[in-house]
Length: 204
Length: 196
Image 1 (cartoon, rainbow over the protein chains, first blue to last red):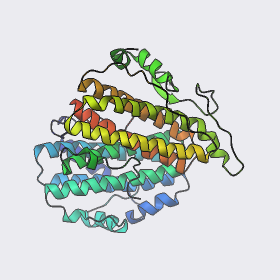
Image 2: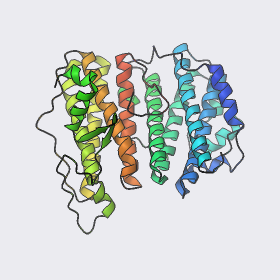
Image 3: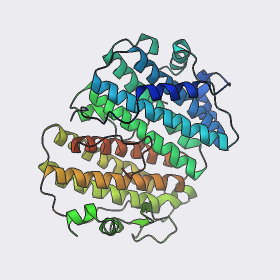
Image 4: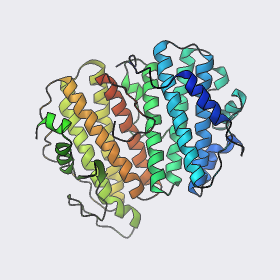
């Protein structure tokens, strides 16, 4: 099993970056550092969505940073570009759902240091600012997907609305797929390492 | 029911799924609601120490177990036709499907129910090549994902929902790897729906 031959046509890098810039300009609100504990404390669906969106924005920022700053082999770049587009879509879906509930989007990280403060607060063992190589990027994004899985895992324990629950579960499943494919890039051909757990909870 | 027929004819697929205690309406797959008169006989007897919520989940959880048993049968039957890294991955996924059954069975027992047993046999058609096996596994994994998506809002809030979501995510990983082995786009969309 390899990850070569993925469809490279889904979304161009320029389009992703343009869309990403649009998202990053959305918001004003509590510090991102509080995002995870905010999910655990959420009492309303809007609280849970807002906290999940805060994590998703850090994920979007991280993918874009990797695409901008790390030299990736073509197959890896196609995969990361595709997944970045998915993360952008998640943020857009959450933003729209939050808006329907009358909520406002949380602040996205303004720079790498802000993103790393979120990772430190989450006790995430890596820092975006340290990512320099393709291997480092794949390792980082693999861990990042675990963080995203964990955010949705907790959100699902808090949400009440059936439609929002299905949406969160659908996104969580997609984050799990990203982790599996990035795991195959880390350990080519070894799906046992890429999909190690029967019960996927992510980092939470 | 012929394997190719199941794979390519939606009405045959629905019949196949009905046999697993899964209803299909409007092209989507849905677990039968706990009070909806499922086709399986489910022992939902409760004891005083168990929560009413979990006991109400028993029928849905047992339908999930029934679907997991189909996946186990499919992986068990298909693995000999696979080879190399794909076979190794399938063996891992088979073990994970068994773990899902164990996790779901634990919830059923906590709800005062009896986990549904595997059937004596499953009609999985006659896949002859690795590609046939992978296509069958993809169909079963997709169906299972759609069923979990349907079930999550119907079960008790909290740990039962998160348990189903953790299983759904693992099934989503399986289908991505199976699609990769089939040579198709492994992660075609931003949301897992069970339709890809």
